[in-house]
Length: 421
Image (cartoon, rainbow, N blue to C red; front, side, top):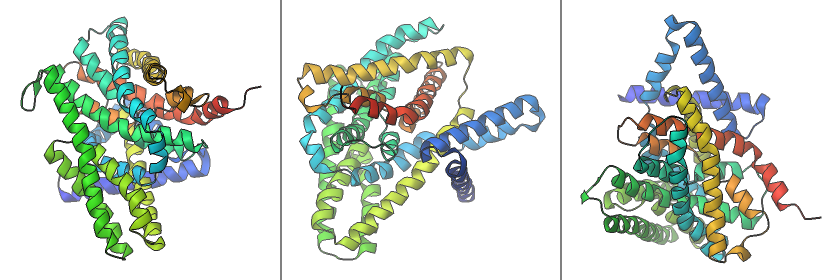
């Protein structure tokens, strides 16, 4: 795609995001990101109906071609994600995370692995129930891509839900870290499923090694670059330059992490936590803090708007049959069950219940939203006869998660945290 086409496409998406945002703000009054998904989905349905009634117009075909020009996986995973993760981490209280480090670390690692295997076993039989013969390895891939909660979706919803600081720290911290861990787990599982790793045949030992290098390397690299930028920011007092430095920090960190074969998402999260806490306290004056916070809030809002708009329109690019629709409906309770087991299991087995107030498990289960990251990972799968099924099922779970769970999470929070008696 040439530069002019890219500009026209971005102009179209930003204009639609602004228009749909106005419609939502004026009439629907849903949370901004959910409103964009709902309106884009409704417009997509109208386009499909028009195409069915007036096939000569070819409206759906035109929109489909536009959507296929958007490489969702490349755009999200190598474009938007680094900025959105950094923005989210920048506003998270590191002290609150450290106080709950064992709970968050457990949910972001053990919880993800447990959830992946629960989804794998249940969907191995579930796909057969609706008429599909899906190999166990592909079910494992589906479990790995659908288990991580999406920090973009989760933190977008948290803006509109009144929760305690303790619960917010657990939800935000887990979503930020299990995203990075989940992407690494997905990479390992895909290598197993398709038999080949980047550097030779994938074995169990090689899988553990890849997982450890990606996770530990990402955390270490994020700390290093965050510390270096922090030291430089201490020597200057120019908010324009410091805003620019945070922007370059995100882009350079993610690009270098990919080249070093360590986790880019984890590196960006760690760098964001470092600058957002230590950097704000000791390397910025009030004016600089104010400008950096406002700049990244605006970046977050714009990119979130475009991303959730694209999720709503993506239904036109996903081929869904009746059987696939049945698989998606079946996958919704399976994913929720896996989430509950992945949260309650490690908390109970490792004796961490004292760190969780009454109702927290139900809030974490229902508030574990899936979003664009799962769709991007499904789109990134190598071509196979099973890929359309996994993509359609993933899309169905994501839509349910964003719309149904996103709209009802505040009610769940109120019910779970209200006093007994």
